[in-house]
Structures are given as structure tokens and as C-alpha cells.
Amino acid sequence: MIVPMKKSTIFVQPHKTETATRALAELGLLHPELTVSTNSSLDKIKNEISRTEIAISLLPRVDGMLTPPAVDQAEMSFVLEKVLKTADELQKLREEQDLLVQEVSRVSSWGNFDPDTLSYLHDHQIYAFLVQLTKAQYDAASKTLKFIRLFTQKNEIRGLAICHKTNELDELGIEAFVLPALSLEAMEKKIQEIQGQIEHIHQHIEELKEERVVLDAYLETLQEAVKHQLVQDSMADYEVAAVISGYIPAAEEGKLKGLAKKQGWGLLSKDPDDEDQVPTLTKNPRAIRIIQPVFNLLATVPGYREKDISLWFLLFFTIFFAMIIGDAAYGVILLSLSIFLGVKQKRAKGSVHDGILLLGVLSASTVVWGAITGNWFGYEAIGKLPGFRSLIIPGLDSFTPQSATVVQFMCFVIGTSHIGLAHTLQIIEKLKHRLVFKALAQIGWLVTVLGLYYLVLNVVIDPIRYPIPDYALSMIIGGMGIVFLFENQEGDGFFKGIGRSLGGLIPTALSGVSSFSDIISYIRLFAVGLSGIEIAKSFNGMAEDMFGSGIGGIIAGVLVVVFGHTLNLAMAGLSVVVHGVRLNMLEFSSHVGNEWSGFSYEPFQKKVVTQ
Image 1 (cartoon, one colour):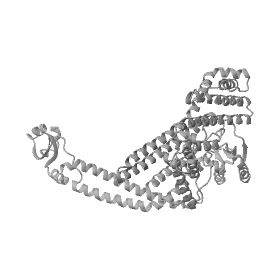
Image 2 (cartoon, rainbow, N blue to C red; image 1 turned 180 degrees about the horizontal axis):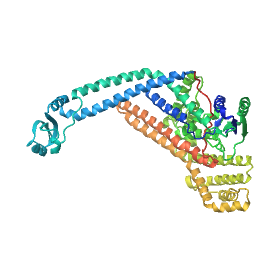
Image 3 (cartoon, helix red, strand yellow; image 1 turned 30 degrees about the vertical axis):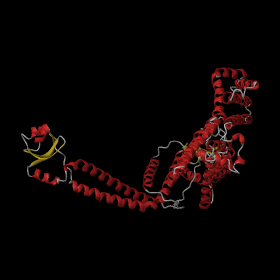
Image 4 (cartoon, one colour; image 1 turned 180 degrees about the vertical axis):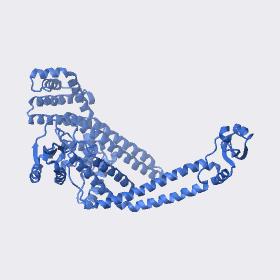
């Protein structure tokens, strides 16, 4: 369920904003409405956060290291500077090494020579330059210059030009080779020295990895400092009082009242207005809450005034997961993995993460579906073994032709039930708020969806086996008629509402078509499940052909089976995200009225204890 919120406005004396901010952090219940801050101290903190994040990124992670309960501020700053200084040294060495490598690449074709020799000659008015000339340039230059030919490479002549003056080459349009600062041998030696220094620094960084726990703690204190500053800066100063507003769970309102009384604050609490941007806090029993990791992964939050569909999402997602994965053996593998991870985490932390519990539920449902459809690694013979055979429901046997029609039928039953449930929830919600006309419109949509179910069976599966009954057409026409009459009623006159419906006739008709396509969309459960079986059968067939080719063939066959089923399971997992999640997040959510426009309730609270 979505927890009801209260909007609380707090009034404090202007000179007590710092004290009030600390008190609210200690309370840890208010989700404040923050304003944009231009405080210079806030910029300094953010800059320090950036430097700390850079330092943390340089250090390797150490498993099992926890943030200490108390962290010395001076120690954290010292560690940060030490790490950043080391990183700066490493960066400078890498830049120097890169420049030397580039210079070696430029000079290496000339061989090893000492540039100081040419500098010595220049100091004694002997203007010798290394040059690289074309044949034409060489012929022209050799008439006026003394040229010592060193070697020829392709169509280029390299050598030493002896000039009468320093700018003689410029007058001839010849560019002298820029001398390096060091000889080739010296540069290569220098590169090796720098590489040794870099390796030494890497060893030092490895030794510093245990400091990461301090920097992690420092980063958290800085992030809290930002929140603290933002909250304090958001206290609007009206001379007589500083004011800040925020949201608090209605059940916790008494704690804020008690704090306000103790601190001598003014406090105004009320239900949020329709225009208020209220954060969303969902609270469900553990059995339902296990679906939350999926919402976290998708970064989706229902709006405060939307519906918490966690229960229905979990129920139908479990069905979708089982039908898409479809293989009992895959389910056993996933179930074994969830049990292993659960036991390991229980021993290490005393509790099991919701995601692991969810995986256990999903994999167990997959085992059940795979068993009743006789699908074990896509190999029919396994399902026919004693014990396994008795679990198969004949009409659902994956290896019989008639099962395709039965599963398609089930898909449309599930789809109609899913979408019908969405409109039923809408009806209950509208009646709860005494929106009778809106509830009637949702009844119209429900009737329409139930009528469209027969049309889908007729169009998609078999028009002879599933003829459209007369009452189905009456349900579609009658349901859309009810929608037309009541969906746009706003309490300002019945005929005005009908007028609005006439204006929106085309969008309403398109919504009816969309409901038809939404039901058809559930056929993807059959299609994706079938593709998984066919892929598994293909790999099995390839392996069987190899098994008759001796030991080498058996080994190759085993590798094909392992690779094939691993790939198939990975693709099925991806399909769950693409299709199983979609049916809940798009088809169901659009009919239930959820746009997932919310943002999470994040109370301002103090987490880090500093000393």
C-alpha cells in the first residue's frame, strides 16, 4: 500500500536554523521541499565530494570492509590528500612516459645519436643539421651545401647538412629535423625508469586500499553535509521566522509534533493538496515486498495518488516468468541457485535479501509449469520417465500439437483477466472517492474488454472453433456506449459531459482498439515460450548427432548441450525483462491508470556518526 502523507510546515526563529536542521536530521522523518541553493560553502562541499569520488575510484575495493561507526574528520582529510597526491604523481609519470614514447617513435628511425654533439658544433659556429630530403631537394641542396649522406629510405635521403649560417636551410625551403632532448638510448632507459616508478606507485596504491573504508565514510559525511546545507538554505527567511515545508508519513506525525513542542517551533500539518508534489512510500508485507527489487531495477515509482500494484505485479509476473522460461530443468537450476545464495547470505548476514526470495518463488513456479507441460531441457524422453509422466497435464504437453491451441487460449484468458482486474481496481477506487460516473465508465471498459475477449479468440485462434457470440458484440457496443456517456462527466452537467465525449470520440474509439490489441499482446507468452523449447530441441538434436562419433563426439556433444542450454536460459531471462515486465508496466498499468510518475520518499536523516 502507498503510505498516507502529511504536509508539514515548520516555523523556527531565524537565528536557530542550524539547530533546527540538526534536530530534523536526528528525527529522520521529514522529506523536505528543497529550493535551489547558491551558497558558496555548498559549492566547496560539492568540490570536496568530487575529489573524494576520484580518490575512491583509484583504490581497489576490499570485500568485507565496513564503514567504521565513528570516523575522525581530520583523519579523513589526511587520507584524501595522501591518495590524491599519489594519484597526481602517477598521472604526471604517465604523461611523461607517453611523451617519451612518442619522442622515441619519432626519433627511432634515425638510430641512436647524441643530440648534445650537434649542440656542441653549433656552439662552435659549425651549423650542422639533420635533414630529410626528396631526390629533387637533395640535388638542389647539394650544389650549395655540404651534405653528409647517412642513408636512403624509400624515396627519401637522410643526412647531415653543413650550413654557412643558421638560417640557410630556411632560405632553401628545407626543414631541419627537430632534435630530441635526449638520445634514443637515454630515452628508452628513462622510459624503463618511469615504468618502475609507476609499478612502485601501483604497489603503494594497493597498500592504500584499506584506506578506502575511510574515504567511503568521508564521502557519506560530505553527502550528508550537502543535504544539511540544502535543508538549512531552504528555510525561507521571513524576518520574524524561518519556514520550511516537507512531507512525513501520517502515522509518524506525532513524533514531529513532539519535537516541535520540545524545540519551541511552530508547526502546521495538513493533508497534501492536489497540486503538491508528494513523495511515495510503499509498505507491504514481506510476502509481497519481495517484488520491490524489480521496481528498484527499473527505477519506477508509482505517483502518490496512483495505485500500489505490488501484489498484482508479483502474482502475474510469477505466471509470466514461468511461461516464458518454460523449462522445469531450468527452474530447478534457478531454484538451486536461489537456495544456495539464500543459505549463504543467511549465514553471513542473518537475513535473506528480497531479490533472492523472489528468485526462489519465480524458479519454483517455473518448475511447476515445466513439469505440467512435460518440458525438461526440451527433451521429450525426460518427461515420459516414471514419476515425471504423472505430472503432465495432457492438454498442455509441450510435445503434442494440440497444446499450442490450449496455451494460446490460456494466454488470452490471462490477458483478459489481467486487464479486467485493472478496470475492477479502477471501479473500486472511483467508488471509494464517490466518483460514480467515473466508476460507471470503468464498468463500461470492463464490459468492453470481456466482449473483446471473444473477438480475440475468433480472430487469432480459430474462427470456427470460437465463433463470436451475439452477446459479445452487444457487450462491446454497450460497453463503449457506457464509456461514451460517463467517462467525461465532470459534475458540471450531464450533457456537457456528452459534448466532451463527442469531442473525444476518435481517441475513445482508438482506446477501444488499443484494448483489443492489448489482449492479443499476451500471445507473446506462448510465442516466447515456444521459441525456447525449439531452441533447446535444436541443440539437443545437434548433440545427439555428435554422440555417435566416439569419445571426441561425446565430449563435443556435451559441450554443445551445456553451451546451448546456457545460451537459451540467458535469452529466456532477457525475454522475461522485455516481455514479462512489459505486460505489467505497460498493458496492465495503462488500464489501471498508473503512469509511474512518482519519486521515492527520502527522509532527511543523519546516518554517519563522526567523532
